[in-house]
Image 1 (cartoon, rainbow, N blue to C red):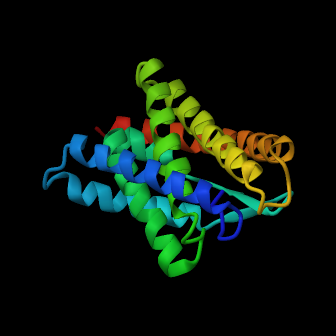
Image 2 (image 1 turned 30 degrees about the horizontal axis):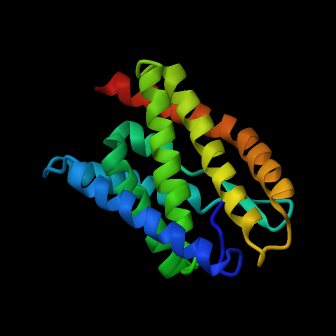
Image 3 (image 1 turned 60 degrees about the horizontal axis):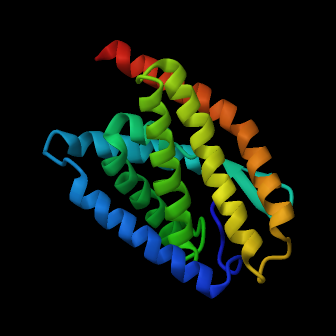
Length: 195
């Protein structure tokens, strides 16, 4: 789902940098951070980093992979979860070239903001249940993918229109999202049992 350099028009990339920056600034203000959370943030971020390194190509020039935004939201709450996700995406872009530098704002917006907050809202709506964790994993990644499809589809520098990019991104990630939902639900069940 990482959008590489060259896929977004400059004005869209700048707009998403601004949106991501404002959302992360708000999250930093709202996050409850104490010394006991530091190891938990590190463990969650490391696990998500590893899971995101597995990519499967999908049609029309992009790929699908586990995102982990729902698990980050469930374990760390959405504000701290979005910061952890953004740190993973930053390291991936700067060190591993996964996603672009010009598109980092879009990738943070999609995977650290949209995914995390949609997932947490669903988790809360379904009373923090295992079903809620499944729906958070499934629909969180799907919402992020639809946003990515809109962004690349609106960009004249990308070869396909929004009529192609949104269905391709949405459908493929909805299928992968079932697996992400199951993994999120199983991880949540394990964490809840150990608590």
